[in-house]
Image 1: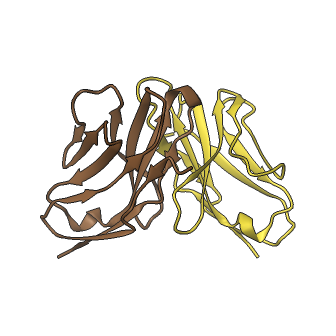
Image 2: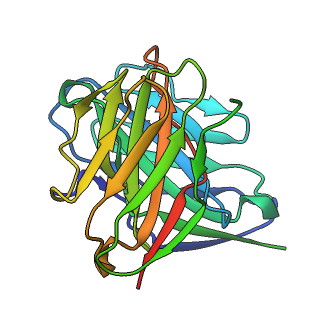
Length: 115
Length: 114
């Protein structure tokens, strides 16, 4: 069964606008972590933001914030004030602490920022 | 080193040949991971090392795939009798074992099997 679902294969946003990339997850483990990575065309995976399942506050890192809705099992990434350099693939991932150290990734969302 | 280094960056081989892909993790990171990323997909977990030992190799697709990390630093992913379906980007990542265990990835090794 797919543990991470990203339903948006591709998204467009205009420069300086905000965009939300969706991610839902499936786990019965009470302890887990959610991650977002960016993969530009160069191919390297770049860590953006992390949310732990017990964290009370939504995570924020600069222009990135994570809209964590635990009951809905969703962990959407919000990018504010989009820049042309934000154009890339974005992957949501989860680690279930009782299941080992493997990160399970979704299929990704391709984001294109237009001028 | 400053980041995770992977060599070669590109490897083209013929079906049936043996290949080795190397990963040099961030200095001091005891955890090392191999992932495989096929075109249009997210990375798929292969194997995880804690120190010298493979703590989780549940993602290795079959016995043609093997990985070692003999001194707890550099790791080599070995693929025997390559098949066209093995063509993918092989990503290596390392992490410390504290906190959120954020993985830092290398740029990957692109393997093409003709």
